[in-house]
Image (cartoon, rainbow, N blue to C red):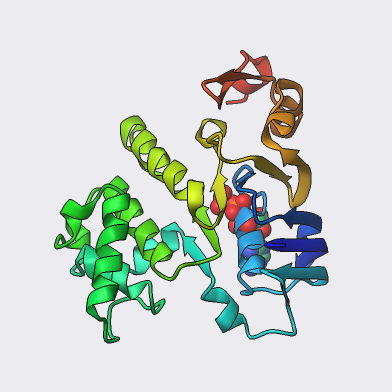
Length: 264
Ligand SMILES: Nc1ncnc2c1ncn2[C@@H]1O[C@H](COP(=O)(O)OP(=O)(O)OP(=O)(O)O)[C@@H](O)[C@H]1O
């Protein structure tokens, strides 16, 4: 099993940030993790990566039970693309070196690399449609280009689990669709993906399963098409919404709601 979380909670002071989380991810599944701001998504990811420990409950990732395994070793098998990673990178580094640094999980490239590493890095950039960026520095890339380079960097370490934490933030609609098409390709024969978002329309058909998290609790988890119904999503958002399925994607429409429009 890729992720097995049983009755996991996490408290900070008198606040229960995560409450009785149960979540199982099998190797042949890709999951979308959907929740509003402050619902606990980042906290859950921090737990999966071993940066925080559940206050109660149990968790194992890639078959390794926490407390019985070297987390630094485990993290080598997990790729995590997030805004905080973006902010750590050096603007003067070029794309090929950024991708190569993924092999060593370092910010900046200090270790020796060989011809085969460079070939692999270039192949990854090519498969993500950005071979043209190889010699370009990070500070000259657009947001969409940066995200693709960071996904290539994460794949360089051949992870078994790839976490994409709101990768479409800040992208215009076309850059978003381009990035999503790359993610769709990666999902085909790549690692298990956990895709984190606030936006229903980003859930590609390859995301077979969806976990809804609300106020620190699992609101629903299961096959995406079962989870994403108008009725359930209205309860999830506490606002009447309608889900429309088109070309395998789900689109969310907020119904004219007096409570929402008059809330300001
Ligand atoms: N170390 C901490 N101490 C106290 N409260 C915390 C801590 N970390 C997170 N929280 C609180 O827990 C809740 C969940 O935070 P979290 O960052 O996991 O949400 P999120 O779903 O990732 O939100 P966003 O979509 O805005 O990134 C928030 O109310 C946050 O303020």
